[in-house]
Length: 74
Image: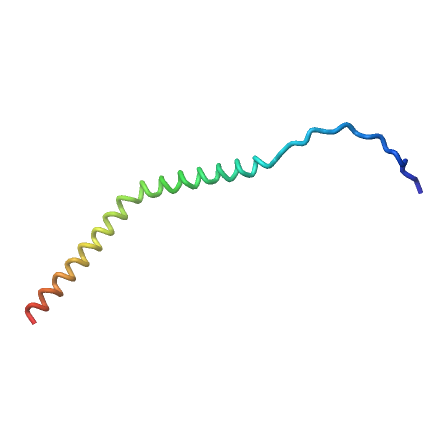
């Protein structure tokens, strides 16, 4: 069995590389990419969604108007 020397030679301190900023940077990159994709989706689908909601609103207003005329006639 080999014995290690009691006083091992000291190594020169090596520079430590900090990875603390790397996680934050990756998080920010993901956040920016998700934001850009969301903005592009809203821009491309915005007009379609607005037209659909307008059709639904017109239909609801037409149904409520016909209900009011039935109440007057009835």
